[in-house]
Image (cartoon, rainbow, N blue to C red; front, side, top):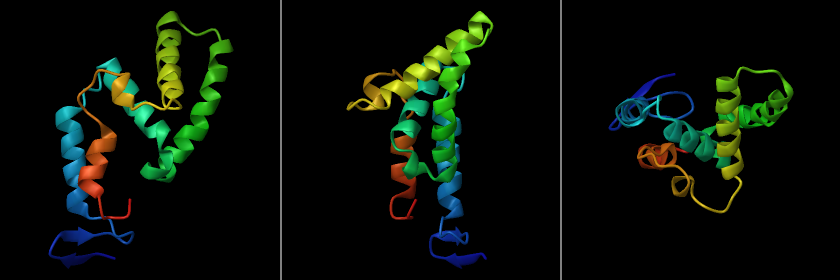
Length: 122
């Protein structure tokens, strides 16, 4: 269950609650959910290494493969444009460049997780 140690409290999987709070605080402070470039960078980084982010990200990647089939549906123009942008971010994840090279956003979930969870087995 829970146990205390010098670094805070750990859950069954060994992940430190303080680390999660730190990661979420950084996400809240630095990630702009209204900025399309930031949304696309986040998608790109998670799609590039879904195994790093856990089973939810791996399921997201698998589900995202079906998103391209939504293009055949009659979607409103603004939804179609957003879908195209997200599919572009997904396609960029398969290239041999860093996602930050494509998308102008200061927040990197990859960098945040590496800083916060290095050594925690995530």
